Length: 173
Image (cartoon, rainbow, N blue to C red):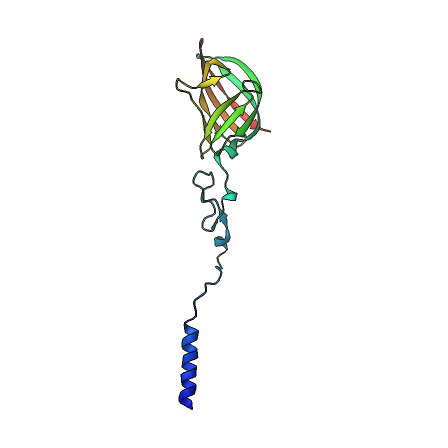
């Protein structure tokens, strides 16, 4: 009789020990963080380790888009100030890295830029030497750089009569 009880007890223990192991939820609160897992995003891997969730991503154009007030200081090649003009600029994202800046050349025309993930956007260029700036005789090269109030603008506009330098700070409204 004791042999039967031992046999049954051993059989139950063997069967119980063959149950599949189940992981328990992690106790580390960092593993429940959501982080961006898209390498083109500005905040790629921020919050890792955790759970990948690309809904928390923000992209280079997200940093720039919005409405800005820009006071444009235009300089001649001899570094003398030619004039100052104010603009309202609208930055619109075309996709994650391409954007349009409207307001320099009226409401129907825009300047195109490619934004990088480190806070700089560079003017797109055509096959010759820049993109057209308000008329086909003028071409623009330059960049936008994010700062605490908005972004800094630095352009060189080459025209049929020479060139001018445009610079200033665009302040987010």
